[in-house]
Image 1 (tube, rainbow, N blue to C red):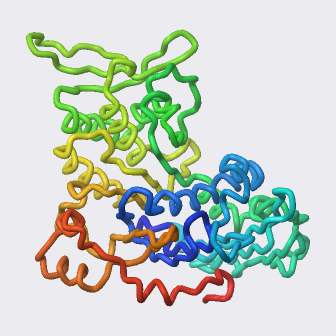
Image 2 (image 1 turned 30 degrees about the horizontal axis):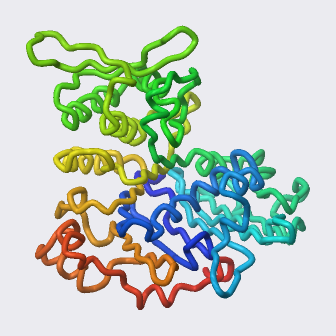
Length: 402
């Protein structure tokens, strides 16, 4: 058994949107740092694409992004495919890889050109198992009677009925990626089981209700941190409104000894986004015990006063003790902490429209290691560089590497 929250040990991409190639070793807490438009969001979207393709279908995931021609990288070389490789490990210690490459066909069509999955048992509960699929054909599979493969779907969906593959499938399916929309959160929401927070916060009221019913003090921690971000907030809760529901906040108002009640429609963007970020980080496991193994958040500092950065950092550090966390940011205030090491940073830059992702350069690492500067101070000085020499050594083939 593993007590580490790391689910994705390494992520490698090839020709995904603006990312020609990357191979990143991930930690429990990861900061993707770079200027606007550098391509930070594209990295998170590749992981979201994987979850969407398993949860619905590859066709649906591509359609949501404008089709395969909008997903595969645009460049002079005209790549016709894109690929994703995930090196993963589960709390049980079971580990392996999951990789796929999707190629374009005429008239906007596509096919899953190559897919590989390997599962190694940590406690020898089963023999290591694997499969390899090429354009709908099963090249090899550990099962004696595998299900049929199709060139328009990921084979892992068909294999999820097998006990060796189900834990990986569930973990990939329940990756959570968030870019909260305050306007959506303000609207009256339709009730749902609240098992996983939606990416834009459209079921935040349901998740908050479920969080309040859970033991362990997570709800109290969310409210306490929200009160530090937004002075005067004393509570946040689910509120039924006919067949819909919304959020209700309690906030101290000058001249009144009791907290006033405010619905979501009366609260600021910053308050709603802050609540969304905190609930995403501390959301409880589903009713069947399955937890969200990884949480990715787009610019959690958006619409918040710089003074809230300390609270956000505390929440990120605390959540990363049990859940792997990836955040994108270009905020020096959020990164202005000596506890943020160079190993937890991914520097993201853009060169002629191509996104370069990699570890920070040696000069930056030395400055942080010697406590000369924090990551935030280096970012403020525009001195947080990418180690491009290491980037140039990244292999573009996702399937041949060990």
